Image (cartoon, rainbow, N blue to C red; front, side, top):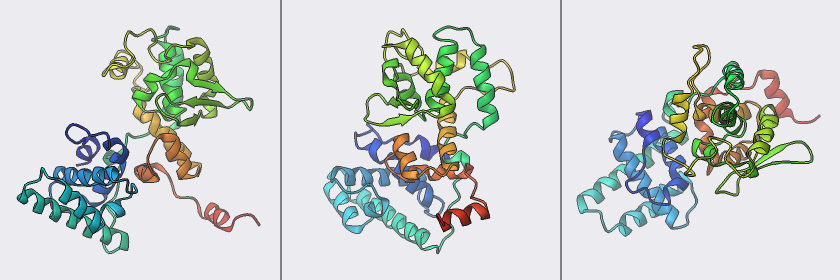
Length: 303
């Protein structure tokens, strides 16, 4: 079920989908085990509702999506639905709304978000260390050492998604007077500050790349569908103690590290390119609760 939810994309993928995708997936993950309808049907119906609400300019909030006025407006305006489909979709949304109310009131157990249900398992510190050593051992070429370091700096250091990572050029990276290295994510207004562990390597890569890409430079196309996967297959570590290179796991490690350090979730979500903090819920499976003493200090505040 988890993979069905994660991989779902609506047919023809309307432009509104990316804005609501995380919210739809989190909502369906929360209610899927309590709703008797097939998960693919629930995904299709909830996605249709969320995109309708997005086109209407409504807040990106599942509670707003599931208001009766929002549901009615969505179903009435969709002239492509036959009467039978209209009734089925209304029944699905009524059940989803009912289940969400139970979940929010605590009348039903909240479905547990397991690691394999939501996001790629993050690398731990030891795995990232071994990957860093492995990257440095590669031939000092643009598609060897430099591309391997680009994956680690941009995904484990800046939390970029694979396509974003592949689009970064040296001119997108800036060093501030404070010494911090910031990244302007191509195609967005998002500003990301690189983690201190990776900032030196990222600044060096950017200086070498200049106007070219950091990852697999000198390509004939800006981005090919299998660019990242083909590179990782060609560059699988020979040492079994070194994990495979996976930009998604590196991004997960970046998010989890920030959450463990109690960085405000609004700040993490904005830097990660998420539409809301709801998209971070899945990562809490790897974030331990604060100790009793830490909880007391945080709740007490400054004395």
